[in-house]
Amino acid sequence: MGLPIRQQSGAEGERVARSDVHALSEASDDTLAGRAADGDTVAFEVLVRRHGPLMRAYAARMLGSTYESDDVVQETFVTAWRRLGELQEGAAVKSWLMRILSRRCLDRIRARHEYDDVTEVDAAAPADTGPEHLTEVRTANEALGRALDGLPELQRRCWVLREVGQYSYDEIAQELDIPVSTVRGQLARGRRRLLEAMEDWR
Amino acid sequence: MTDPYLPGDELIDGHTLDELSDYLARGRTPADPSIDGSPECRAALESLARLSRTTRDLLDAEAEQSSADDGWVGRILDGIRLDVQSGRRVPLAHPDPSADLALTEGAVRALVRGVGDGIDGVIVGRCRLDGELETIGSPIAVHVEISVRYGDPLDAVAAEVREAVAAELAQHAEVNVASVDVTVTDVRAGRAPDGGLA
Figure 1 (cartoon, rainbow over the protein chains, first blue to last red):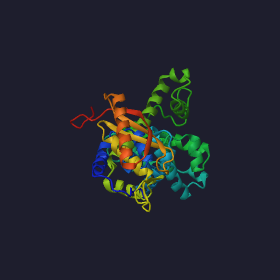
Figure 2: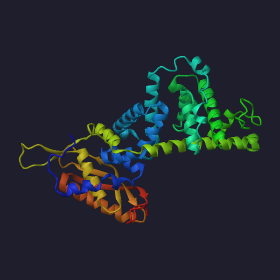
Figure 3: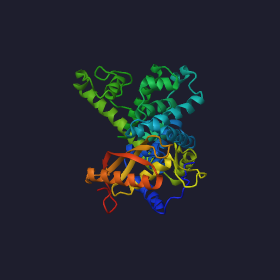
Figure 4: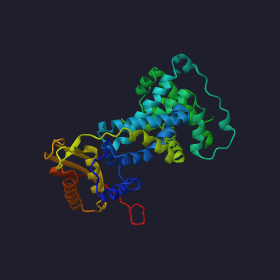
């Protein structure tokens, strides 16, 4: 494959060693995305280490399972590697990765056919306000994390897509194949419940 | 559940929470005096903004906890290494006409990165090779993007990269380098000798 047939001098090995993950860790996303598009796996590794953790957290919130979410993040990076040449603005690589990831998560969600009956979704009773109130919560993050866990799935997904994935109402509706009014309603309910949880915590 | 800003679907000084959320998402423009002038609305906007911030903070905190463990990163890299695009084939001259020697375009780019990264303070970004790379001796225009450490003289560094790349390609890839364009696309805070950011 990409191997030079002629043997390079010994100096080549030293140069390659210098371009290690540590040396590249101070490079900007733009620089790294450019290199990675040129086939540099080391630059790509720095991008994976830099953005992968947030992507894992995001996918876990979207899919509710770390087993499945790790798969999805992995698929996202493979897709990104193949399509990096199409990325015009290397500096935008993070939001580009988040978009690919969101789409992958949505594919998985759609495949489960959970939202085929929207009337049922709209009528769904709010999740019980049980365990999150029982133990004391120390930080705002913890309070919100529990409140998010307590939200019905669709509310949680709409919220994460909107707030972290930067999706518009229309985009969420399109991707989940539900009416915009449903998205609006889900976000309104989710928002209210999360605000309540934050107020209770304070 | 006694929060004054969450009165069910009731209005907050004439506005629904939904409206206020949209207003916030639009960056509070165009300015709506009936919202901005209302202490209740402003308080609700503040709660909404805090909720958005906390949501992002939460994900960041969860990201930090998961961190990038080596096994996980390794699996991703194993997946992509099988899929390296090596680009065009760059033939090399050899005295024996029956020998068919070549580098790949990807390997030539790796040479450029290697020699550029070897210069103190430089990190090479994208590299483009314009010309008939597949024909021996055909003139090639090389375009290299570089990131330079803050404080280093841009012109001198760019000139150094230009010369080093031209020499390297002539020697190791036998590419007929017609020109080397070096563009500084990024100036970054470098590492101080103690390893921290300068």
